[in-house]
Length: 311
Image (cartoon, rainbow, N blue to C red; front, side, top):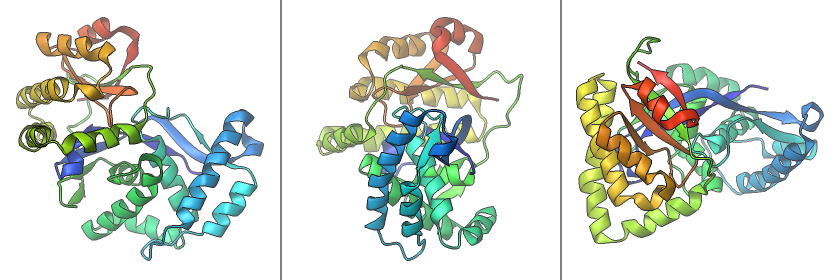
C-alpha cells in the first residue's frame, strides 16, 4: 500500500486557530502506510493499531460528508481482517502521525479516489478548502479539533501556506542547497505529549483577555512576519522575526514548553546561534529549530538534533 510522509508545521502553532498564517512542509524522515497482520513483524503493535482503527471507523461512520464519501463498510471489513497502520512516525511528537493515518484511510476508502488524485495535480483553492475541512474533521477524532493543514500537506506532499480565513495555497520554500548556511532542524525532547489536552489548555488561556490580546497583537504578527521573510528568502530579516517569535513563546507560552528545555531555548536566544520554538502543540515531542551556525548548534545540542532542511 502507498506510503505517506510525516510533516512539520514550521509556523502557526496555536495562532492558526485564530486566523493567523501557517506554513506546513512534508518531512521524509518518517512515513506510514496501511498494512495487514500477515505482513507485520511486530504483532503486538499491529494488534494495538487495529484496535484503535476500530474506534476510528466508528467515528467515521458517524460523519456524513457529501463532498467526499468513504466506503465505511469496506474499511470495517478490512479492519476485521487485520488492517493496521504501520508507521515510523513517532506518536505525540508533532510530526503528523494522525495526519498520515487520516490521509492513508481517506485515499484508500474514498469513493472516486482516482478522480480526487487526478484533481490534486491541479488543485483549486475551493477544492483545497473542501479537502482541508474534511480532513480536519477526520483528524479531530485524535485531537478534539484540527485545522486540517497537516493532512492536507501530507496528501499533496507539498508545502502548504494558510493565509487565514480559509485561504489555502501551495508554497515554494527557499531553494534547498547542500552547502547552504541555514538549517531547519528538529530537537528530540524524548517526551511524548497529548495534543488534545494542550490545545484545550490553550483555549482556556485564550478566554483570558490579557492573554488573548497578546496572542492577537504579538504572536500573530511575529508568526506572519517570520513566514513572509522566510518565504522571501531574506535571512537577516527572518532571524530578527524568529528571535521575537521564540522570545514571545518563552515568556508568554512557557506552559507549553517543558521546563527542562527553557534554559536551552534562552541560551539560543542570548547567543543568537540558534532559535528553538514549539513544533505543533509543544509540551514535549520534537522542538523545531532554525540556525545559520549548524556546526556550533550541533556541538551545543549534541545528539538530540537532526537537520531536515538546508538552504
